[in-house]
Image (cartoon, rainbow, N blue to C red):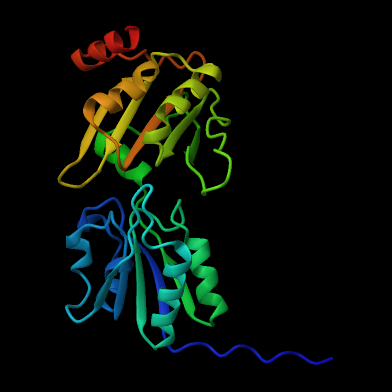
Length: 267
């Protein structure tokens, strides 16, 4: 029996670093360290400049961001570019907003690096759900109200059927929808079919910890109208809790904005 020789390790390395929600002081110490040691940084559209500036001035910076409907940097091209840099012996940082392991395509980039014999690691970051909960002062779980947390998205890979993103909506569950603003009507309709109250409070958190940060609460029944009225069309986390029966959680108290939304929904 013969064994194939182990593939030699490349001289360079790859760190998939979570940039968190935006604010530099929400980075982990390890994330800062990897950035300060980087020779090349590939960064996303949602990464703030103050975070990117933690890399040395001499470090090569490559923008590989994607916009909805305009993927000038397809994933295969990103994989190839990251691997090519590491094979030159460089310390490569792939800087991703939030946490690389949560809707960050980390698996594809790790697989490409490991196939080329490159040492690769994940440096976790604060994900949008945690950042939004902290900013609004609303825990993602609460004893007697919600003991299950679901992170999901209403979008999917091109060519795949849209995911059944509301299938986990049951009493005692908090659901955070990522990248789902464009699917808000489908999310609302699905949650209503699951038995959630039309007046269930929904928190919309856009650009959390960034200068353009916005948070608003509305009733589930007017979620799409709220997003449209406020002009929220990009990156936002949508947080909804389906409370346990008898939890005592009160229905959404009407605010001027929510009253306006209710009138829109009724019309």
